[in-house]
Length: 341
Image 1 (cartoon, rainbow, N blue to C red):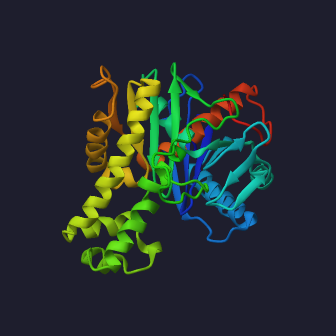
Image 2 (cartoon, rainbow, N blue to C red):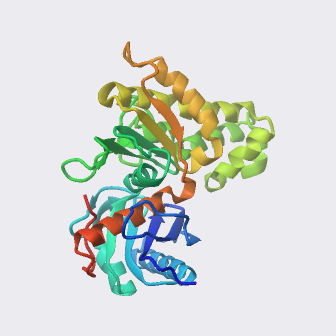
């Protein structure tokens, strides 16, 4: 049955999967209700832009078809820096896009306005409007998956920075001379605490015979070192794998301490696929590590929260941002373009 309210689609384009969700958002309030439909598909393994555009288009169309109703706008969330005003992805290594007019290409195929958003900024916006950060004035979001992204809330609003790329918490350098990160630097939080970092450590342990349950679950192909394999290893009593997860939490806590010392937020929300599986364990390790490094007087000043929206934090935020952009444009079909600030 078609919705009586305008339909907005939010799409989370990740390195391994694309998640599209449809929301009916009334004109008199911003907070969306439950997703009317959601679609999950694998991200194409090629680095050809046309394959990615085709996959996003198909996913969005399927979500629209399942939800019914008229779609007012599409918000597409991708990792990395963007030019929102022009709808261009500046750079995203995991998807093979550089200076690519993604909004225009999608809008042409879908016949509706398309707006780009950074994936974790979208996730933080979703949590701020409809999730764990509701009512927060100053907060930080950290999402842990294949990489690590972040977002900042200052004075109740998503803070974007001078070029729109604020919140790249995953590329905070914590260990000079540490592991190589995908960005080209060494010792970034992402290189120390992401699922990719965990997988590298776990593979070394499995190959050396120190994590037999992980070896049984995932073999020696790092592509199989997903969160589900880590769960199997923990169930198999691989203590070494538990230490890998705890080490991720340790470095996360070091980053949190820096953020709290600099920004003094009231809350930090932790989301993403890794948090969905091991959130309580990682948050426990992170809190302990953070509290050891806080400036005197800041202990107990910040709440560490787990995402309430889970896999739908990013699609929900992208849909909310698309609605804002459509309303700022006067509700007209403005074609491809940038996000509301």
